[in-house]
Picture 1 (spheres, rainbow, N blue to C red):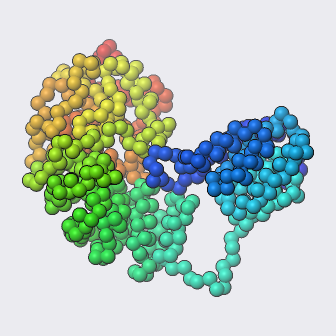
Picture 2: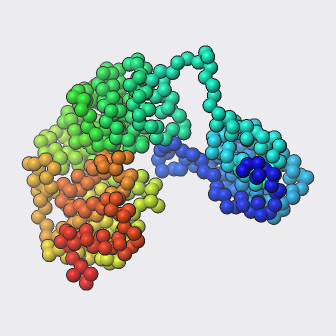
Picture 3: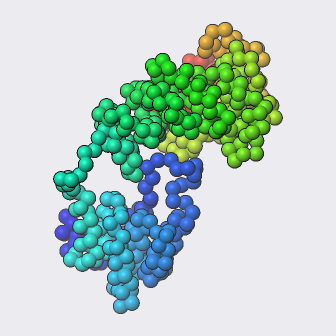
Amino acid sequence: MLRILLSAQNSPARLSGLLLIPPVQPCCSGPSKSGDRPFGAGPVQGLQRLLEQARSPGELLRWLSQNPTKVRAHHYPVALRRLGQLLVSQPRPSPVEQATLRDLSQLIIRNCPSFDVHTIHVCLHLAVLLGFPSDGPLLCALEQERRSRLLPKPPSPHQPTIHGGQRLEMALSCPHFLRYPRQHLIRSLAEARPEELTPHVMVLLAQHLARHRLREPQLLEAIAHFLVVEEAQLNSKVVQKLVLPFGRLNYLPLEQQFMPCLERILAREAGVAPLATVNILMSLCQLQCLPFRALQFVFSPSFINHINGTPPSLIVRRYLSLLDTAVELELPGYQGPRLPQRQRVPIFPQPLITDRARCKYSHKDIVAEGLRQLLGEEKYRQDLTVPPGYCTDFLLCVGSSGAVLPMRTQDPFLPYPPRSCQQDQPGSNPTIQHSTQRVVLMLRERWHFCRDGRVLLGSRALRERHLGLMGYQLLPLPFEELESQRGLPQLKSYLRQKLQALGLRWGPEGG
């Protein structure tokens, strides 16, 4: 196939095929420290825009050659694609432009060893469409790079043996590493010698499990055992990373010394790294295992005064506000200090980052349209944040007779703290003396669960637990049920059944 393409003649029709190839985007193997900012934002993304808007081949070459510190591998396919667009109107370049094409090809040849396989394939395809000769230096260099990535390199006779711990670190440190096979991780861990399982390796493993929502008991138990065995050698900045997957994946390890070990580390390190301390407590909050002694420390005036004015002050106060909410709703026996009212901030004042990033895959828009047609716009609120700061997907107000009431006539918020709670039994909902009931429709999207699709992530379970304890009636909408609805009419019928099962009624459709 490649030989046939290379033998074809350059033509406007083939060049116009370049217009159909989507722009190449930079790859990203995981979340970046910049939060919501896309990978490559800033000067690198600015250079891509300049390449896409270049008005001549010479201008393309100038942007690439004069900005060596900003050029990345994915910029070269962008330049080739733009070159094809420029040549659509003049398939036969002038002598000056031919020299520019030679210089551009030399630039790609020099840098193609650093390209990943995908970028090499895209450049090869674009170069064929542009009519570069099949025996020319550009296509030969790209084809050689492509073949070198396909052929496994023979092991050197002097190459040292790679042990389990090293294999694990190499796999987890790979920049293109996404979801390594579960059995390989377990085997590498089992074959590793104790001295090979360093904090760095175990942190990489913990971050991998958390990032990809892999709730693997064997691997999580190995991290818990490592934490207990190496307790004396670990500081809180490392411990926060090791503990992260347990809270995120809603997994309380069987290791009996797990909690006593963490309590000792918190007692020893609490005053050293405030943000790390609060991060550990956030993971334990998701597991419903908050230690009273650590709570008394982080709610003490000295700790709060210490974090005020520091760079992580806002995020620490947000986490402390959530911990204070957990104390209010889940720990009736706690008698220590609490977060002062003036220090409290909304916990999650807007939809979470993961929901905003995956909004095009979410069912929220179609559910909103179904509710609009079923109830009317005046009878529900979307993305409403209720005290003390939880964002709800959809909220309805329901009268004592079960009628869905217009939102403009009701206060959608329940009082916080709840006026009276029945918390004698674990997990019991508070009894709020209100004639109007608040019903929260909770979207349970696929990414709200661990990868096995059965266990809610810790942050989601925490939000639902707290909303229930505050008196909101929850109506979960699982992704399996939402995905099975074909079109808006089926979805409306599904929503009608769900609402009627709660005894709700509305308008003529509700009967």
